Picture 1 (cartoon, rainbow, N blue to C red):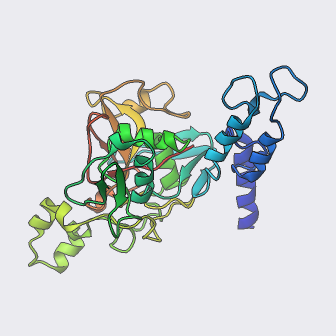
Picture 2: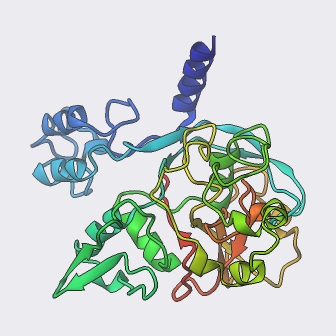
Picture 3: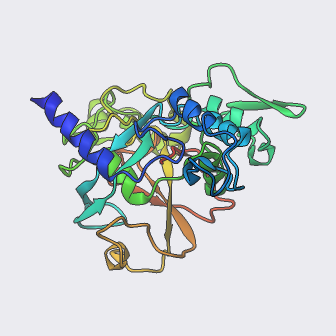
Length: 338
């Protein structure tokens, strides 16, 4: 019965999903079948018999090898992405940018199952994006030799962090994707039942997600002689990111990992810190595919980090950041949507 229900959900989601530009056969994938379909149209021009503008991806009036090359570039774009079906979900919480909850409708979307890794970001840097390199003095996950960038030993599967919103946005665009909205990140984490954590409502412990459990009351009571103030104040020195997908319980109802802990993730939404706390509810689109404020001074990020305490690793936790061109944080990374 569960398998049938899931199939129905996916069929409904497929019906309302806007479509992937390079997916010509409608199977929600970009694969060799799509390459074959556009290749079969080579030579057709605007107005000619059999012309179909969908295949003219560079909009030059002719379907040619350049259009084929575009499809090849985005082969398997949805691999390692999860489909979040259309529908309403419960958004907000007591400790968040939204201090209460509302019901919000979102169209279907794809989102990366895993946070962007150091390996993936190095590939981006070496593909003409050297300007988006930042030397991380503390972690040193990437090093540079000449004009090339390399992954430091043991860092390949760690989430990339310490990157600006601007760099995160360029990275997602380079993959044919985009940054998720604030609402999309929350729905991807909590599903439709309003759960507090990706795994449900059971309080987080050290085996569920990557967070600073040493500062929780239960740990302090168990080890009263520890210098807890030092561990909490200097938490960045005692904690660190883990390889993406390392925590089997920090996985959402849609199969998306690390949305509660490890690193917080950039969203596409603007926020004006001068606005009242419930500003989100006042937006025209607040309850239907919200995109955030049209302008602002900072961007919002979603999710807790490896240095956060138990109260912050929830599905609705969020951060106000800083200037999207320059703000960085050890606990801030990225995943992309489509």
